[in-house]
Length: 458
Image (cartoon, rainbow, N blue to C red):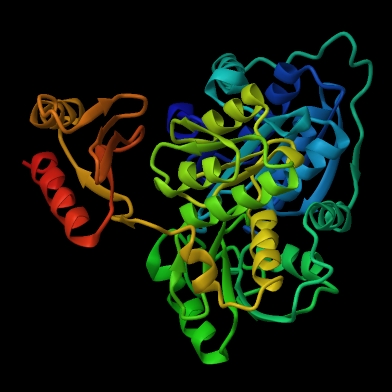
């Protein structure tokens, strides 16, 4: 097919509509290119429940095997289960998923051995260039001299080992019985939750556990409040202790308290950071991106740790995790990264920490997380603009000469005062500016939000 790779090769992954933008023939080229760029003798591949995933995964495996690479297929899995396999087997990996995107999409998340991320600066550009060269020339894929014969393609199941590894990292032996509603959104949480939670003192009320890549109930994107409504209602109806919502590939986990109120991911980051610091003797570095709450660095310092602020994006978090030897990292988008999980993100491990924290004390979750939710935030507000740089410059001009604020440009523009801060970042893929505001109280947050939006949307 005549594909435009600039439309499907993103900053951190491959993603597009199947078969309009890419198909199995292109997946096979990506498999060959991945094998060549990594130089691996063996790789591991897995996929989510989308209708196109098995075919794309098989084609990718054939492409890699044609270059003499042995391929281990782990079949249906969550993205963090693929990261587990990459780490435990010490192999480069490929996960076929489009996460929370609609059913017609699919994609590939790639990593090197030990779950090290592959993005534009760490191999994805070279992979794209190889695929484009083969597409343009129509030439057969080169076969390295070492590949005297094709590689093998074998199957193995890593689900139980993945669950055992996570359970070994969080002590759940003495928690009190809890009732938890889990909304898998017809995604891979329906595959992993039963095995990970098996044998724990939990009454699990499943919602949408049937694996269905057409997402018949709601989008598998809990970041959108509309997709939490069913879970919130069910938590209240069941008088449950909490609710958990996973996205399509189950690498992100969102939490709802016993009242049905969403718990901000920043609060979960702070809670897990405190627990990880306690596990490490009150010492360690915690990574957080620049639009997580002020609460996160405050809690980290209060528990003896060192907070490190990064740009938004998993490649930046993972790179800083490795550079700083950090024990944990968290993002506003409910991605949680653990040193004990090869610096990769796993929402499931964060969920186990929440269950352990709640289950070892008697107060409800809303009381427990109040300690970690100290400020008022706007959430992310997107505005369509014709000139991103011009609008950011206008904000800089409006606030730059004020004595009561500081500016920094680590990622977009962050404006900070004594009682509030906000960040404006340009989207890399759309003509949008993304605004996040936080303040010590609701009226201040609303005032600053309206001021910033007025400038952005002028």
